Image 1 (cartoon, rainbow, N blue to C red):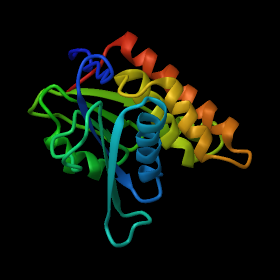
Image 2 (cartoon, rainbow, N blue to C red):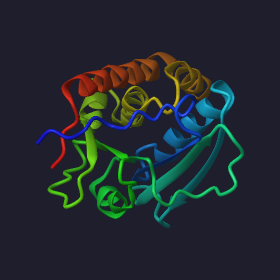
Image 3 (spheres, rainbow, N blue to C red):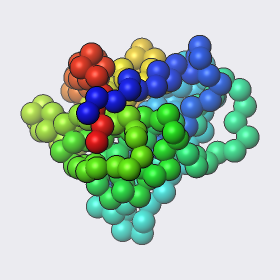
Length: 201
């Protein structure tokens, strides 16, 4: 059925703080994605940001998550308990963390990796085939960058310009063009999703 539009989390104009959790498995660039968001917010959007991360012992292929808090004021507690935005790149991550989402929060899933099934609690769920899109661009590893583009255009928690600058600063050595292309593919997918309207079970 048709769900409400995702919350427009423009922290620079509408709210003082936004809490984000990204979760998946250890070879998906989860922590890198969090770092890109945090750097974009703090260095290029002139916000405050903190990042924490968590691995299971067998990090490659094991459960992995990262948390980012963005605010226009000092952040006195660095951990996310009930995220405004949850990005899930594995089904285990979705099952573990989706119950924590705030009532009006937004969940973003890689639909190639996550089947949300039916949920008792109404949530805004946005879907993107990030892994498939990355494979079509030639490198599965850039699914996280595609997801970041989708996150940027659907939530507006960080500006597109700041995210591009952050990506460029972290991918030297000839990878800039591919990562920017992946990011912009995600941006366009997000715009299409917003136009179509979120779907929820």
